[in-house]
Image 1 (cartoon, rainbow, N blue to C red):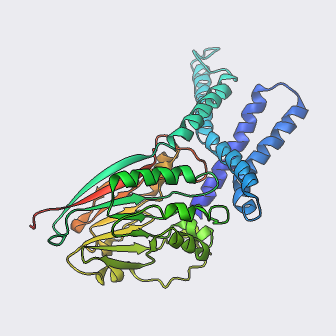
Image 2 (image 1 turned 90 degrees about the vertical axis):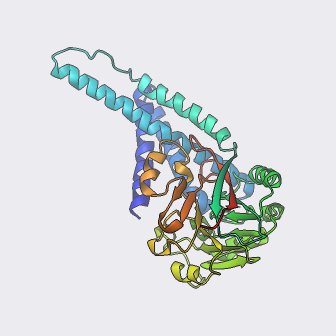
Image 3 (image 1 turned 45 degrees about the vertical axis):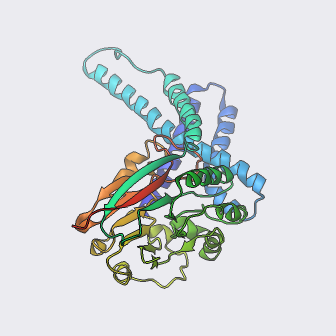
Length: 383
């Protein structure tokens, strides 16, 4: 709740600050300022209005509103801190000149510069970030283990995470994932949450497209926070119709070769949403899996329970998006202990946190390229 409050305050402040910057460089009179205020107010409400309007909207109108609202949000993310830094610099420079007894500071940015520099920079970042979000990269991870049984061979896993399928993220991303997986030929495909952005209403047809994703030992998925937002009954059905086996606080042993376990998302973001799945303690669930085999744990959020260490070999997670749009990652790196990438843990366990395969909200990424992770589990000599 505290994080949500901070985000809401920051977003409102950014919009108010943008209005202040516009009116400070404009000399068009009160009527234009009022009109500008109305436009900024409408833009401020759009991202908040999208999940409410999506229940009744047509796909076309929802797409227009989503692109407008989310691109506006993406624009504000770099604009606000850059404009604020320039204004703070001017304040410090003028204060220092006053204290030193000088009539003018050596160098200050003009009022126009403090608006048009962040305006131009933000426009470039959003334009570049739109294409970066479509530049899906393959990240590779090599895991050596002595827990693969004789004759099993090596195991290749493809991890997708945080696709956030919606009216702004759909066919293009799925087709790119299919192309990569066909080339990589994984034995197992896993989705570590937020496969869809919320409502299934306008994307139900995408389940057929996702069924084209194939792997020798199957596809497995866990529930992220955005699956709750769309109603678990509908989102779980969509994921299952896409060909995934949904692991909800449960695990399976595949061909006596590897254990795969999955936990539902838990966190303040989903408080108040119904969860009809019986909860099972993570450690207890992992303890029931076939001993001696490599155990893969799927969790949307990259939190690690100390009591589970040693009961799983590799945890695959997502959720953080590595901030998605710089400089948000400067905040998310403090919110998530395992922010991105691979980390070794005590007792022989490890975790890999994906940057995400799609985008949440704005269809934009900046300094956080989307990834599909290919994990090769390779047999090593027994110690």
